[in-house]
Length: 253
Image 1 (cartoon, rainbow, N blue to C red):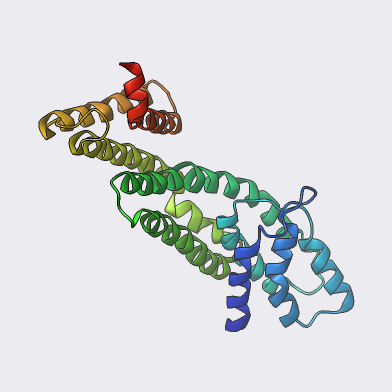
Image 2 (cartoon, rainbow, N blue to C red):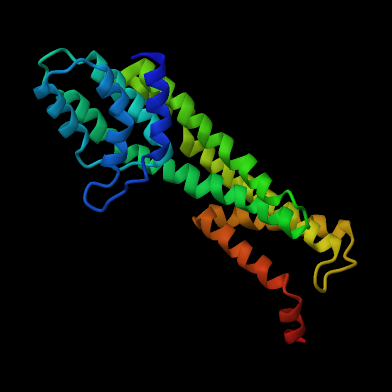
């Protein structure tokens, strides 16, 4: 595929969710991304129909990990022998979209986005005007890199493109990001106690720091007992909101 067409396919992969439908999910977005390849190839009328029907079938995966899969399928389409039934292309496409969806949901929705949100919310609590910028700077480069590098690796390796996703091991990174989220939450909790929000003004740092470390230890014990880190994060945020309300504290008196 020409470099210009390859770039067009990658850019179009960003729009895979724009035509989401309840019948075949992301199939229109997937086909839209493949159109530059379709136009570049010299296909007969019959091959054009088969190509379109092949990629208008049901497709649904995580939008950020669609680019690596699109890259792999584009390479396989180019390498497909003339007259082949393309069963291997459909097999790769259908067998990988489910695992890619689970991996993407675990890392991006379940780890990176909450972590970015905690950083942005914590900076907003401290009065920083850069809070939304911090959220974008933490969240955006990661998914752009996975999209771009995954697409290039997928196109270079074809059906072996899954080796890139397996190699970066996003579920393992997701677990570490969740732990980082707990540490960041404890840090902002220390700042919260030390800087004097609500009725906690005047608490010295040598009290706030042990409280924060104790919070991390408590979180670790909860995780060891099988409680999801997501529930711990949500619970911590709820407590944070409750204790930051001066009016609510006054009602308790």
